[in-house]
Image 1 (tube, one colour):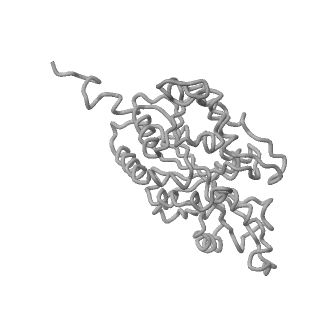
Image 2: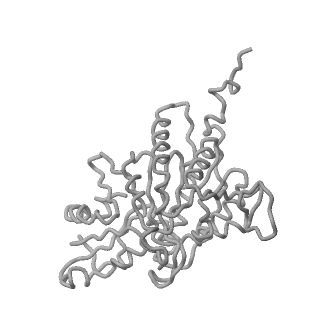
Image 3: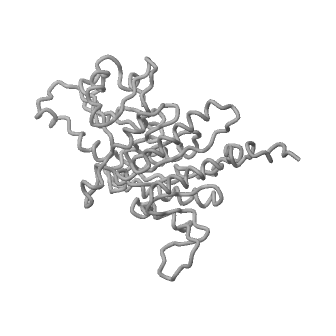
Length: 343
C-alpha cells in the first residue's frame, strides 16, 4: 500500500518546483526601447518604460507570472500592467474600486514580509515573479532575504534539486530622488546586505536609464537560482544609451563612456557612479577639487552589474557606492578599468 514515484511525499514535484518550471514566454524587450538620438538630451521615467514590458509579460504568461508589492505598483510607475490585469481580490467589489479582479496577477498588500513570502512560495512551486518596493522599506525583509539565499546555496549542492526561477527585486523611489518624501524614504543599505552574500547566488543591477533597465529585466526573468536586486529610478531622468548600446553595456557589466570622459588612455581618476541622479551630479570633472584638475585624464565609469566580493585573486569587484572611490583609484593606477574591474 506504500505510494511509489511522485506520489511519495518527499518526491512530490510541488515540493521540488524546478520539476514543474516552464520558461516564460517573453516579448522582445527591444520593442519597448525609448529613442536616444544623443546621450543625456532626453528624459524618461525608467520604471514607466519597464511597466509596458511587464504588461506584456503578464499577457503572455497568465498562469505563471505575478507581480508582488506593498501597494506601490502605481507609485513605482508600473501602472501599465493594469492594462493587462488587475489586483488580486477575492471579496466583494464596488463600482469605484481600482483594478480589482479575482483573476488579477498583481498582488498588493501593505506588508513587505507577506509579499516576500508570497513570492518565495510562488517560485518554490515552479512559477516566476517580481517584487517591487521602495528601496528604503525593503529592509523589512532582510532576514527573509538571508534565509532564501541560504536555501539557494544549499540547494545547489543537492543534485536532485532542480533550479527554480530567480527571486527578482525591483527597488525604486531610491535614495537620490526622493523629492517630496525626504529623509524618511532614504536608505540605500539593502544592497550592502546583498553584497555580504556569496556571489554564486546574488546579483545587483544598477541600470542608469530606461533602455538598460529593459535589458536587465529581461536577463533577470530568464535567470535561475539567483536573487536579483535591480535598483532603478522612477522619476524623469536623462537617457544615455540607445538600445543596442544599452545591450552592449549590460553585457559587459562595466564600461567607460567615452562621450562623457575628457580623454582616452589610462585615467588619473575613475569615478564610480551608483545611480542615475548621482551619475549626472558627478559628470562635472572641472569642478572636482575646486577646478584644480588641469592635466588629469578623467574616466567616467558606470556599472550596470555588481555582485558580492569574489575570493578569486584575478577578479576585482567594483562596488559602486560612496565608499568605493579609493578602491577604484587604486585599481585604475595598475590596470585598465574595463578589464581590471569586473562587475
